Image (cartoon, rainbow, N blue to C red; front, side, top):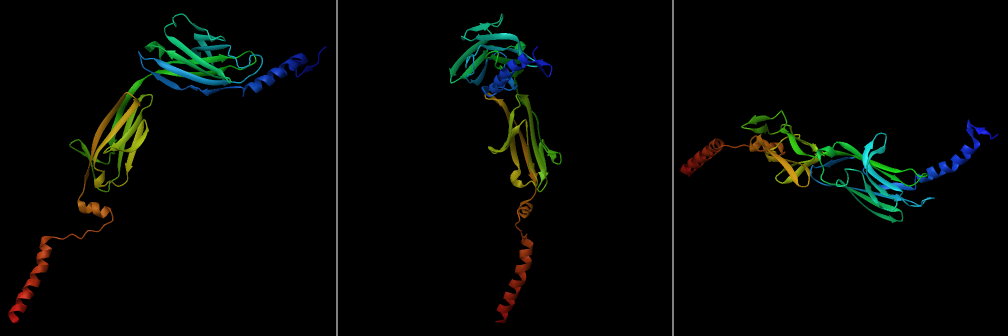
Length: 291
C-alpha cells in the first residue's frame, strides 16, 4: 500500500511536483508586452476599431514557443471567452463563428525569439456591439497558464462643456462677470464625454491650465491685467473640439492698480499747483518794485 502525505497518495504528490515546478517557471515564461488590462475603449458607430496585443512566449517543453490557440470574443466573469467570435489555430488558420464573418478580422505575426503580435479588427461598429466586455485567451499547452486580457467597449460621446463660470463672489453686468481690483477670483471649466475629455483654459492664446474633465484657475488678487476674454477648449477626439468664451471685467483705477503693485503714487491737482505758484509770483513782483 502506497503511503499518504496529508491525505494524498504518494504518486499524486510525485506527479504534482514537476507540474507545480513547470507552473511556477511558466509565470516568468510568458507575458504581455502590450495589453489593455480592462481599459474602456470607445468606439464610434459605423467606424472600425483596431486592437493590438504584443506578447512574449519563451521556450518551454513540450511545445516550445508555439501557440496552440488564439481566441477572441465576448468576455465573462470570472475570466473566459464565453462567445467565441474568432479562433486562430496553431498553424495560423483563422476560423470565425456564424454571423461573425464580416464583423471581425485578424492579422498576426511574430514567433521570432518567441515574440508575437496579434491584431483584431472590428468592422462597421453598431449599437449592439457596444456596452460589452471582450477578451482574448491564448493557449500554449496543458502545462502552461494561458495569457488572458480583456477590455470594455463603450459608445463614444463627443466632448461637451457643461460648466464655464467665474467665481460667485464676482458680480455680473451686462452678461460679463466683473470684479474689483484685489478680489479673489476662480475661473472654472468642466466638460463631459466618453472618453473623458482634455480641457484647457487660455487667455490671449496662452494656455493657463490643462486637465482631464475640469480645470480651475485661481487668482488670489485680481488685477487689471487679468481682465479680458478667457477661452475653454475641450476635446476627446482628434477630429473635433468644442470651446466656450467668457469675459472678465475688472473695475478699479490706475492708481489702485499701481498701489497693488507696490509703487506709491503722489496725487496732484491743478488747484494745488495754483496755490503754490501764486505766492511766489506775488513776492517776485514786490521785490521788483522795491528795487
